[in-house]
Length: 314
Image (tube, rainbow, N blue to C red; front, side):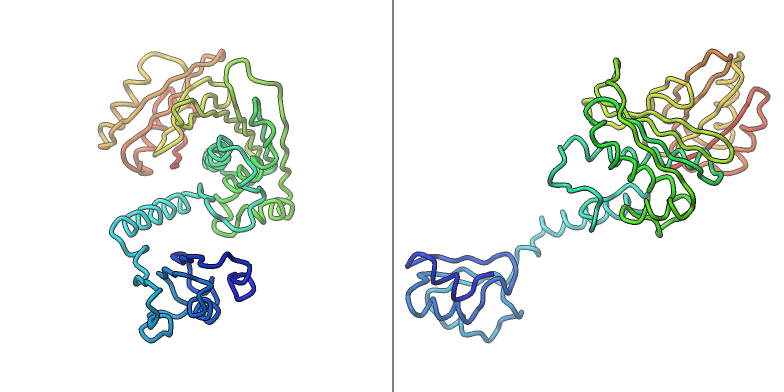
C-alpha cells in the first residue's frame, strides 16, 4: 500500500508507524525515505518477514521497533480466546454469522438493530424444524414494524436455521436459496402493517407434510430475544436453552403431573410458562437446566391429558 510513489507525496519530515501488518510498507522504499530525510522517524511493530533479526532498518537511528507484541498481551489473548469460543458455540448451534464471507446482506449498510433479528430468525427456523421434523414444503417469513424492510434477508437466515436440521453443515447463507429450490421448498417473505402491540415482530410459518408450525418473536428493549406466540398460543419465552413444549387438554392437575414426572427423572425446571387457547387446550413451555432423555419424554407423553410433547435445544 505504501511504496516509493506514496512516500514521495508525503510532507517532508513525516513520521510513519506500522503496527498493523508486515508488508503494508515497501521496506526498501521505507529505508530509502529514512536515509534521505524524507521520513523523519519510523515506528515499526511488524515486518514483512519475521522475526526480523537481521534487517537494514534495524541499523538506523531514526527507527524504533517492537517485537510484534500487540496480539500477545494477556488482554489480547484472553479476548481472542473468549470471542473464538463464543463464535464456536454459536456456530455449533447454527446461529452465528459474524464476519461470514459472501453474506446475502451488506453488514455495513444495515442498522445495528437488524442483526439481532437476523440471528433470532435463524433460531426460530431451527426451533420450528425441531418441532415439525417432517420434510419441509414451505417457509414463510413475515415482518411488522421497521424490521419489515428486511424480510428478504430474514427469510434467508430463517431458511438456514430450518434446513440445517436435515442438511447440517452443507447449508449456509449463500446456498440456502439454491438448496431450497433443489429440494422443492418454497420460500416466501412479506411485509405487513405495523403491529399494534410490538415495535418489531417477525413471524415464521414452517409447512411440512405433517402440518404448519407458526412462531412469532420480538426483541424488547432489554435485548433479550423472546418468542411471543406459537401455533395460536400467546406465550412469552426467552429463546435459549433446553425447552420442553407440552400441549395438553386444559384440565386440572396437569402442571403438577409435569413437575412430578420431571422431578422423578432429576430434571430441574428453570422456567415454566403457560398459555391457553379457545379450544380448551393449554401449552406449557418448560425451560430445563439439563438435557432430557427419551425415557422422560415418553413418560410425559403418557400423561392422560397430553396431546403432544416436543423437546428442542437452542
